[in-house]
Image (tube, rainbow, N blue to C red; front, side):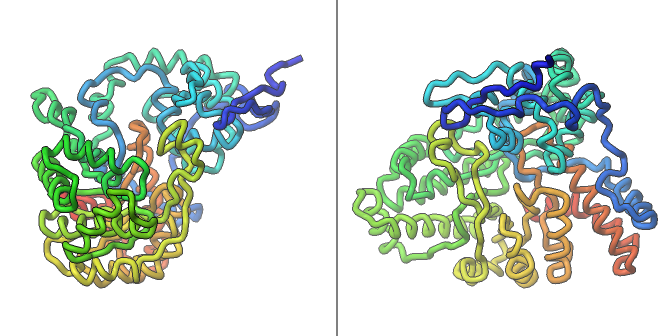
Length: 503
């Protein structure tokens, strides 16, 4: 009897032991045995011969352009310390919630994927994490993650066979040995990826020591810039908000016990970030609404919320007021305001408590922009120093609201399809939805928004292929000349992200 097909026990994220028959693929399922791993050179290009030929030419024109990553979540410590990656599970599985969420949906407990559990469950050893991933390789068929993973494994790490239960240990040993080689250390990979600029996402209380270490290292020639992410200090509804304000006071040297002090501390930390290369702030707000109260009213509201005597609606209003302050500050210091909305964060409270945020359970919700942004745009939409890049997980807003807003206000740029929409067909839908109203030059180009370092080139390559395919269709339909399409795709990968994020 082949025991690889037996049912196995897996821990769910709530700690219960669940029985699942998918710990290893059944015989005959995709991924069994030693199947070659070789992504097709024409993947994501149109099937029609004429359009494919055009798309190939367009793609070839940008395939090797430097990568501009104006928004992402790679830890700058990675490059400052330049330590070898320890193993493939720690590199490709555990830190990437695009990967862990789908494995979790199949019944694999997050500790079994290497995540640390506040309830005390020990994370699995990396080899066991890798086995869980490889034996469920078939779960990623048809997903954008599968395309990125195939490109990472084959084109970055040199893997020639697909992951499976049969190849898991072989691949783990092969990759662990390869990752010890100098050419696979973080800085060497950064150079091989052709990254021109990489923006990280950083807490305002961060001392940015790793950015400073890179800037002061004469052997480092790359460009890594911080991004100011103040969500923790703006969300007055959060249980730990008061503690966050204490941390901000310690970092800024400014008392945050009143509204003026909090605003002053945020301004001081923005200036600290700007002096170290930051060009943008990033905000993950529940929705796009901002408030612009007069100073006395804002101060009184702050006092009620800080003392615990406010209603829930008042705490929400204060959060909106603080986001409005961020817009006001951007109009003064020129930092680009990137706004990510349309997500219900931490949908599963117990997973949030045990494993923290950004562990795969943020879920899209509807978003509204036209009315929500009017108070901000009537103040700053035509301001020469103000710029905002708008992202959403609600693609119904693309043509209805975002494209018309970007088609009028000089301050508004359209963020790339983000997270659940960061996928080939959704990228096509985005271009169809916004281009006829806003054109190509009101978009911010591609933003990879990744924590997975090795997925950066794979994600940019996917976007370049999709744009080549989309533009090839417009050329074949005689909407664009091929020369124009070639210039557009080049600008989407260079001019637009540099312009939108002031890089």
